Image (cartoon, rainbow, N blue to C red; front, side, top):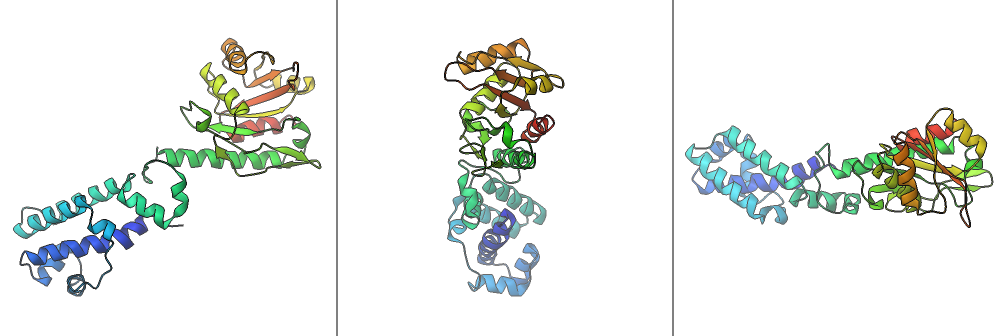
Length: 297
């Protein structure tokens, strides 16, 4: 595991300080004066000046870094820029470069798993898509552990298999919904999870969840289990349950059912020609949906 702060310390700062120290020396400042301005030792300034520090070319060739170095060197040399302002300006640039930019690319190189996420992101942003996605995946993993540890769950898996899904806030397509690739299966009486959850791998359960949300449900997760009248009765004793037409278009049927009761936490259909009857249990997150199933298993 490599943190972006390590990239800043190990790749950005040595190059940046070397460039700034050289720019200040070019303006006639002594090693002592440069050391005072940068808050480093004279020996460090000497090392920078003599090329004793490895330079990251991606940093040294970035025009924004070069421009800031020149502006700050000129300002520090003339006294127009204070050390505090220089620090603030540098911090601003670093944060900018962390947001899907130079430092985020260097971070991906240092920690390849980050490359799996398309687009730019800021690892410090509490509302970033990266953080949201990882929290959803973690929620599903916890929910799966609940189901795996529920002794009666394997018997509730329908012939088509079960899946546990959770959507990110504001989900619009199945790519915004995480699930288990291949679905959960019953193998020799045990629940089998074939792979780690991913986004965009469920059409049916994810599609049902999205349809329910479009009709007014605030649920962000769902799990499907086999249909049983007694199970529906037990669920209906604790949650709002609504039936929908198995032979109608799934989205239209679910929208109509949830539209009649947006508070529904249980949706079910009793089957049709070539359609297996199934129950869908909704919840605010994957763990809650799994706990609701465990409560009636």
